[in-house]
Length: 80
Picture 1: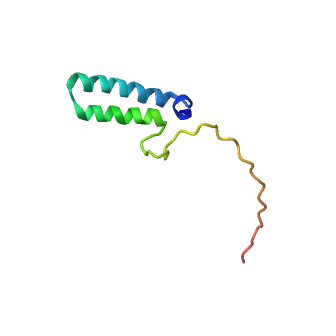
Picture 2: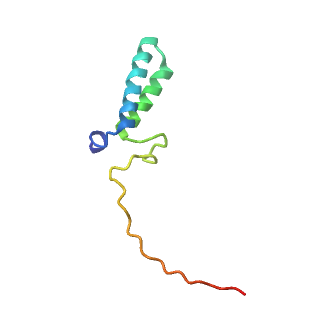
Picture 3: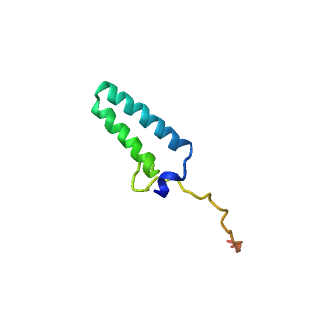
């Protein structure tokens, strides 16, 4: 339930809009293939996943924090 209510970004709204439009067209045209496509988009909206499924392309909920980068010591090697 938490996934359904949080993380609404632009692409999630686009998927929801496409799912509703395709679902209406599927009902009007009695087209089962369009109905499956609409159901696929609704599944992506509900689970907040991309095309990969199983949270493979899930949108991260937290922003990337700048990682602590340690200084690296380099040693110069001279060749003859």
